[in-house]
Length: 174
Image (cartoon, rainbow, N blue to C red; front, side, top):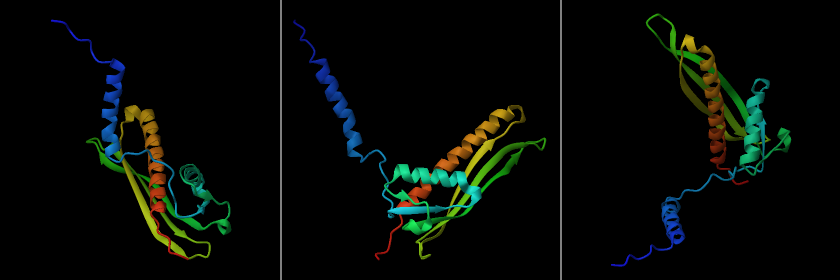
């Protein structure tokens, strides 16, 4: 009984790849693209203590949206006022010897959006982030580094949430 040769392997591979990609196309998956904020220009009004955060927000807006960040409030369609940025580290639990076993890192960020004439576009809104951090005196250096990584992740998450909230603002027709 003669054995037939298998079908063209490259053709079979192409067919399998197309079949594997089909579910992704059907679920509506697409890469995150440019965010369309409802403003042509935006000014970030942060206090002197928030300079790093303000710079990161400016950078994120410039790279992830078509909105321009203005250097002066008078040149902007909208102004984001950072009203609060509170970062704290709270003891969450203690061990039987009374030493800290777990911390909770918290960040509370509040902002409002107004136009250059001081008319409120969006009322004060808050974003609250929390991360738990286990702690051990024997691993102090590693835990300090882990804490910094968690704070950096919280900052990144905060900026992404802020951009989503700015994107969701519905402007009233002029």
